[in-house]
Length: 588
Image 1 (spheres, rainbow, N blue to C red):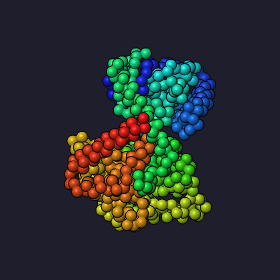
Image 2 (image 1 turned 90 degrees about the horizontal axis):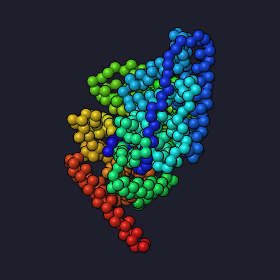
Image 3 (image 1 turned 30 degrees about the horizontal axis):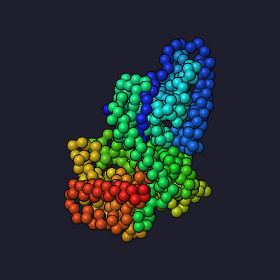
Image 4 (image 1 turned 180 degrees about the horizontal axis):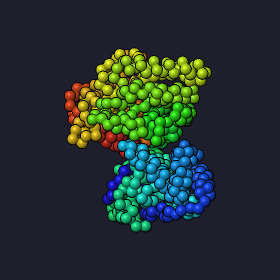
């Protein structure tokens, strides 16, 4: 068995099709006519853009008219037509009198290094966009045709060094049972598209291309990131059964798409999604989210080599608001620092970055950056139901300073007769012990709370969750963290404001009954977890959840809490299975 990163759930069973490296061989040569070479390059870019538009149409058709995921290919189109990149390629051609293919390679290498220097997986994976764009544009310049994947046998497992977005557009996806590659990760476009097309995918499987031959039997488990090459008959039977069970569970989950999120005994809660860009908003709606509880705006800043302009930010926020069609969109202001570095900002390295110059501290110091973002958010609020959320708050004075800045921007927008939501809500992330302790005071200063359990847990327990020597201490089930969460919710409700949660704990099946009992108003989870969480919430009554919470609050150790919840939920699941079996037997 080989292991990788499971990026699209499901089990695929089929025959391997290994795609060898099909990169174009580029030779460097001197040119006689610079103007003609510049025109050849520009003609190639025009052809590339036209071809990409055709890819988008094909992918939209595969996605049953949902063009939002297909628009990931637009990134490459924007990249190829980017003024800075075009200028760089043309300058290399003119300066060195060399052919366009080599000039393109050199310009893209510089851009790649910029992305790779960013200590962030999601941004580093944008390198795939650059490489795919370069390979396709180079092939156009050389007149080389791409590999034909339009007609494939049933149950084909695609295996490649890297799956580029354009490959996905041209694939005969009806007959693909799985995708495996040596490169890529959870946030790569190949993963995004595989999830949209519901094709099981495992990426970052080292050596897979050399391990497998065309036609070999393959099993792909996209949930656990496992790949079986030439599996035994017993393994095939086991996974055929697992595949059947998974496929049935997907059908069951889809029943919850257009339903409200309600407990067994009728308590209504909001179920929202966490997103990183406007395209995710479309998937959130498609998968039944009732809004967006967290729009991580830092990805907008990480996706380029310079600060995004007000207009660029406005366009992205407006797009998300329009796609949500009146559903609530909570936009978190820039949260950089900690594990999120942006090289072009020139932030100095810190000994303790999670405790340093990050989030609101950066924003209140760099008022120019903060004001630009807030203006963009306020302008976008004229097109949808937008809320502003401020991260890493530790004091009332920070909240007051933010409100003062927003008021100033609003006055300026009024003077220029620019529309915005005059009643826009402003809330905070409660993710520091200081904010948790002062929750009763802070609740009277803002319109809503959102509990960030990832940082709240880390700071409350004084644990660096990235440090393997102490990571065993990191748990939101620690009684100190649970009591803090309960008090934050109580303080919010006493002040008459709603409170949500956008950390990983909101999707943890062990935490869900506790959060229901504590009175959490909104669960905001990863897009792929929305239906699972809705189904889980629907399985609980408030009485049962309250009984569990009452027992839990009597414990003083994390291990006691964890063991109790694991045993209870396991027993509960067995009871549910037996009840379902008895029901089926009686029906027969």
